[in-house]
Image (cartoon, rainbow, N blue to C red; front, top):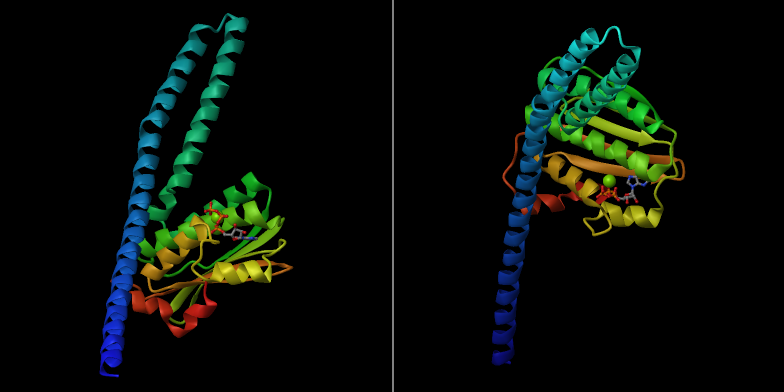
Length: 265
Ligand SMILES: Nc1ncnc2c1ncn2[C@@H]1O[C@H](COP(=O)(O)OP(=O)(O)OP(=O)(O)O)[C@@H](O)[C@H]1O
Ligand SMILES: [Mg+2]
């Protein structure tokens, strides 16, 4: 009897030790993924700037040379036609560089904030994808903290990419507004939706979710925010909520099991 109770005490102790080890490891992993997302944002920003300032500038210089060539070949229609072709290619390359660099990190996000950058992105996305996206974006009186603007912008990008890749929708709506103490970004599509069974899996932290949903969750979690997914046969809605007082909080595993979390993606 005495031996059995000693054994079960020992077991309980080992169990407790294992649990705290798992909690510590999970917190470390969470910290690492948040750090990776930051590094990724910073790299995108640097790459966008370098691309714009190096290849973008080279192409602008090429265009100046083309102008010079055009003037010196005024009398030769065959050469002029060739020069026009080269000029069109240089314009196309310049446009492509600009689009890639702006998608990596839109300068509007730093300069004028989330609302303008979101409208710009939605307009371009509509053109590129052929999906008609209505934007109801409130302009806030004050700028949001930089980390919040970047997180919201990445949520918007990933959600619309998902609409394009998975929903089959031809229409979508993006809402962005301030509620009492929070800002809310909602991306709703009118596509085929997600089956109830898959939705259940996606709402849990599971391997079913891709990098996209996991990254969105992680970004929002760092700002004390959360992500909710609703879906039925008429489409999918993804809602990101972030408190306005948000400051990056220290990673705490316990917070993840807050009562609301079960219903949140
Ligand atoms: N708007 C949507 N309509 C229908 N299904 C969706 C939608 N958004 C997400 N899904 C489903 O949720 C899954 C997980 O999305 P998630 O963005 O995490 O991964 P992914 O898009 O498959 O891959 P990636 O890691 O490249 O983002 C998708 O594979 C898809 O089945
Ligand atoms: Mg995705």
